[in-house]
Length: 112
Image (cartoon, rainbow, N blue to C red; front, top):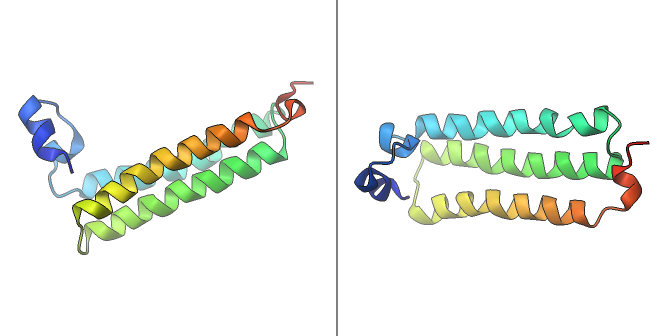
């Protein structure tokens, strides 16, 4: 989406280094897959409760969905609008996770 701008500015982002987008799509899916178990570590350590774990898994699956969708679009018809939708989905899901964590009761984060 911003490949030409990155290249013009001399910024070595994945879309500039590998213009076909396959590596970028693979990294998006890989990081999304890793995010789900990593986000459950606070629950496994007893630092948070079930509401946090449910929210973390739901938002992680949302990111994974859009990552797989991006990977699929790489091999089919991809438009700037599709790329923009997928890029903003990550931001929207992250913000919704942070807002939902802010709405959790205080005992959800209790270390006792």
